[in-house]
Length: 231
Image (cartoon, rainbow, N blue to C red; front, top):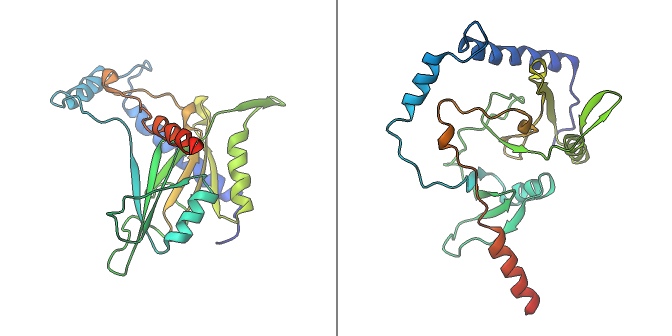
């Protein structure tokens, strides 16, 4: 992989130009006294009027076409800490399943006829298709400056592995800074690491419809481990 690219002044300036545009869109939805426009909230509520409560629990997995299953397995294990799990025997094509953090990644060996359409092999661009992982928000204050050590640990790991990345911070003006790291897997699919938990989750007219994910994987894994110990 390419050597690490440290964030430059120019990159920081570009990132800061992106963030205000997002805020400008939000301000268009607010009225002059800083409150939410009642008409906009009513419109958001209507969006859900004919939507029944869905029996969904959580994101189960994402699936990626890759040019080398082995290389992608090494990347997701070494860079992100995923764990290989068994695939059903009925899946008789070249691939691998990984799991951690409540989500699975399914890798499928691609051929010339199957290309991943959402991959941009060029420069890192936060606007490209990507998946994002939330880091633990362990924060300490040193010399009146807040620092998220887990973001620093991820950046250190990317440097150790020689993975090129882009680093930026957005939303500082609003008092809830979001730190982001962007980098790509061996096939050019972009991944983000962030402390996005700092950003308040505000439903738009659908507060009662939010459902937090439930983990259904740990109990069977613990039981399997207990069975192996007894064996």
